[in-house]
View 1 (tube, rainbow, N blue to C red):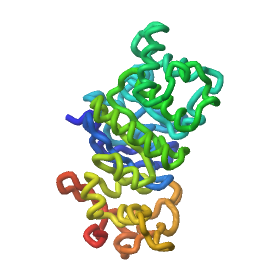
View 2 (view 1 turned 90 degrees about the vertical axis):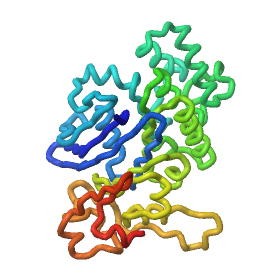
View 3 (view 1 turned 90 degrees about the horizontal axis):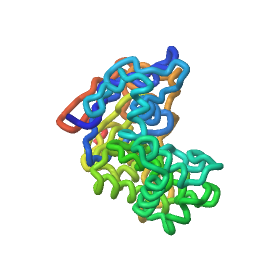
View 4 (view 1 turned 30 degrees about the horizontal axis):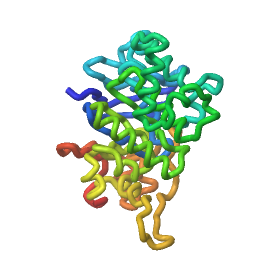
Length: 318
């Protein structure tokens, strides 16, 4: 059994259904990239797994979520709280706003191990400093006593990762963890997370809009578009031979060394909002391969081993 199994997940908020039919598995020691443009449903998928859907009307209305055999969709809030932080941890998008500005960063890490592992103050501090050292924080004991405003963006991100690791979880969900960082620091943070997965045997869901990050870090990838899975496969085959036009177009947005000026392509149009999801294939208004059937009938998911694709003309996207 996989550590995390998501099957046909559907999420509703009030009368809207922004997620529909999301499926994937994740094993220990594996990094799964969840990729797509803003509005594709990446963060909402993470919130569903964490039991943190919007309070006003947000709920799982279809499919199943199983973590280590536990039915997450059937958990009450108190049971979920025992899992969050302890066995499943979340690294949020922006480290600048994830930390409490009036608490020293070390105290914010210490709280996690005191709450979930029952550590004393001294044990928690020692544990936090060791984590910071593993995350390549220089002079960790000094940084432990500093406030967030005294740290750079890259150091703040390391502190947020330390908070996620403090209770030794089995699954970490990183929701675009490098969005606010420059390219050099992004690469460092991604490499730290990859090393953690390999060294500790963690499972990691890496949410991103950047296919170059997926190529750098992930074992498998799920491509989301407008609340549905467009394609899923191991990273090598996805990049070598994408089967969905949307996957192909995302890969086409990656800049390459020596690329001719002006040759980088974007994707025309925008991801539709949940009120404007088109009938049929939701990508069809932006797709170069679209025909009449694409506007009339949603494509069925084709499964071939590790490969999954939902496209009427998947062979034409190769």
